[in-house]
Length: 161
Image (cartoon, rainbow, N blue to C red; front, top):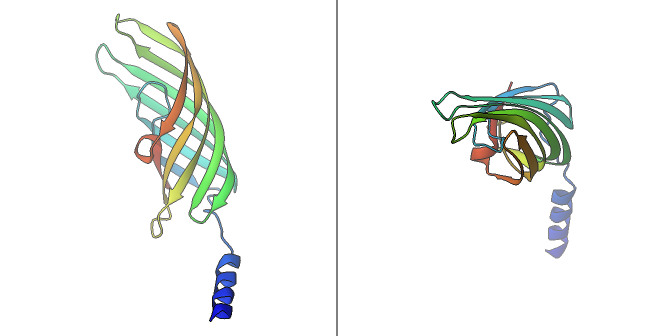
């Protein structure tokens, strides 16, 4: 009995595990990577099995509270799992928003992050991600350092073609 259990455990532990391969795939989805809350349209492209580039653009034309942001990001998969990719990356972008005085503040943002993108079995083209990290935002009115901590609903959902 114990020998059978050992054989079964050995087989299960030695089974190959492959990460979700997204090489040469384009993804379109939702993200929110800015220091100001600004839901954005995001596009991602994996040019190799472990490297991706993405861009996000967000626009809100609300009167007296308008916002605009554009961010380019690069991420590298550091630890692959079955239907799950752990990654690290960096991003840079521009941000513009109206402040309480009715004037517009503009500047740039930089952030470094780590996170994971997971895929449900049966939904191999739909990726959900969460991230954490640090960032700096320098707009005309202030320089701000902040931490990132985003759940899958906030960080992003991407559909890969």
